[in-house]
Image 1 (tube, rainbow, N blue to C red):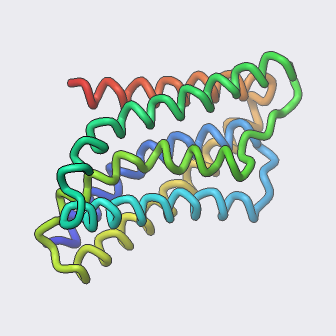
Image 2: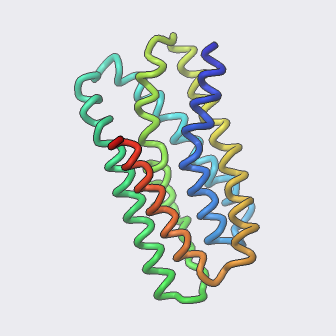
Length: 187
């Protein structure tokens, strides 16, 4: 049963990373094959680690973690707002040139912003054995990787057609994703 739960969690958690992968592919339609694999891998690693950290925190730091979990959507919103605003500014300043927004520091921020909500999954899997929690986190990571590879491919296909304003559009999309994360937390 925990495998089905992990699959459902994996798909749900991967949606933010999928959206960011589409934006990255959109913004960088000539992305190297290596980067097309490394970017989804980075998102998958974050999506694997965050629920595991949450699981461990449930037993070790539950009271402190609860306060952090409440702040997580605000942190994710802030990070995506910063990255999105930076993209919009670069898109306006560079006009028709492609702005590469998938540098290592930006990728780390994207990984954190899109996976920070996965910390709370630790509460959902707290009744699992340690082995079951590891297997669940692996499933979440693998699904995130697959879904993000598809996101990059979709973004590149779209980006090939609309390269002139993709950085600005991508920045707006990231800000919208951040707002959605924030609104979900407030509802």
